[in-house]
Image (cartoon, rainbow, N blue to C red; front, top):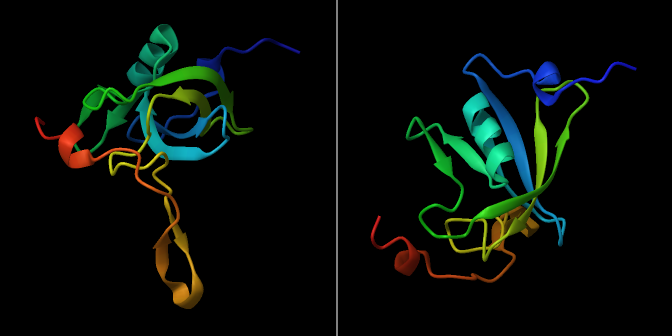
Length: 131
């Protein structure tokens, strides 16, 4: 079998992005879904911290750069078609800007109502006050 590099198999979309599921390596909780362009992925792999491409801001950003809640990369996996990633990380404090450990803190309950399924870890008003 020929050895392939990561960039040999990746298939970025028309906007030059690839979706990445960010998962806590210890708890196995999915923290968030983000998008990386080639530059974000290269910088993430080089520094060992997750960088994302913020579509709303049209810029590269260190995940946690404002809050200090950075994600240290432990392992990266590529799906069979090369069009998405799973990035296993050590999450410092929390992965969600709303104050929860995971961005997936709401669950669908009876009557198709959403309920908050975990407690807040930090107060986003205090953390993001200066931004």
